[in-house]
Amino acid sequence: MDVSEFVSLIQLTTDKSQPNMNALSHRIRNLDAMAMNVKFFGYELAKTLAAALPVRTDLAPAPVGLTCKPSTQADLESDWVAYWCGQLQVPVVFHRKLWEFAYLLQALWERGLLVEGMRGLGFGCGVEPVPSYLASKGIDVTVTDLAPEASGDLGWSTTNQHTATIEHAFHPHLVTREAFERHVRLAYVDMNAIPPELEGYDFCWSICALEHLGSIAQGLDFIENSLATLKPGGVAIHTTEFNFLNDDETIDNWPTVLFQRAHFVALAERLRAAGHEVAELDFAVGSKPLDRFIDIPPWEHDMGDYARQHWGGDHVHIKLSIDGFVSTCFGLIIRKRG
Image 1 (cartoon, rainbow, N blue to C red):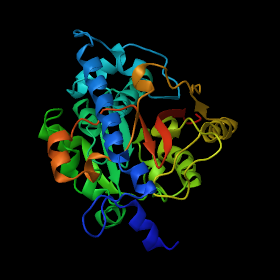
Image 2 (tube, rainbow, N blue to C red):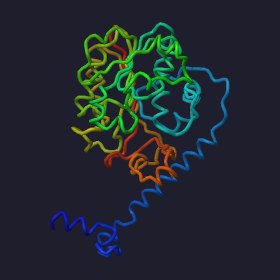
Image 3 (cartoon, one colour):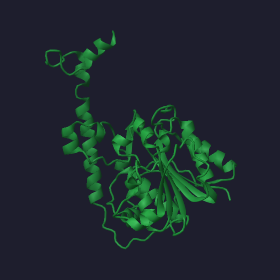
Image 4 (cartoon, rainbow, N blue to C red):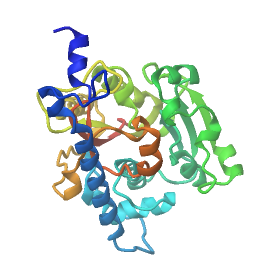
């Protein structure tokens, strides 16, 4: 059977616009509808659970002993996540991206780095609100991303995940224009080739960026190389994709790669052997309802106009399927040797 014959079998209609009645088409014709059912019932559950969260006022930052760990429903229900969401002026919803922002800020706070006069370096920042928040605290921030021509080749510009200009890092609800311009600067940086002049920072971070560097090896090398940008005792905090259900297979040598437990264990061993501190590794992914809801394609930017207009914007999930592998975010906290 050639490709054209196979394609004719899986199409919904024949060349006469009649239902395709062969056995294969009959088997798969409802898969897209089933996927949408799974997605939107999961989203409704997430919204219902978020609406049921208690209203928490007068929260203050508190130590939780943050480890290297995956995102979980319990974290997103916690006071520490609620506090940092409040600081970023966003409601608590069950989305792993919010977990990443809160994880970063909690890790920085616990290590005494959210104070005026510190210097931070962000990799692959896109349009995230963190630089503006840090600037509001008097922290000098270097925001980095790929040059616009390189990001366009990877598709980040079309999905609003790229810092084309310094304006994309400015969030006026978090920081004044004066403070932003005083504390934030933009540099175009290839994370696979960090320029040596980026050095002497108190901390650096990346949020779901290093899995896009081309391979697992390149992502792990970046984590280690990022320590060169820090002063002795400085802290690196990175989040990335974690393939937590399949220890045998994963995605590598691809635009989005998926790390496994063995990769994090080996990295921690290597860094510790070099004299760096790595927070305790915790691989528990949670067992609450939203920890077991696996979101699946299509994603909003792949939907048709009607679905995007009427059903888009609800993508709240902690776990999701990436090229068939169940994944979530994983955070790493590393202190450079003194």
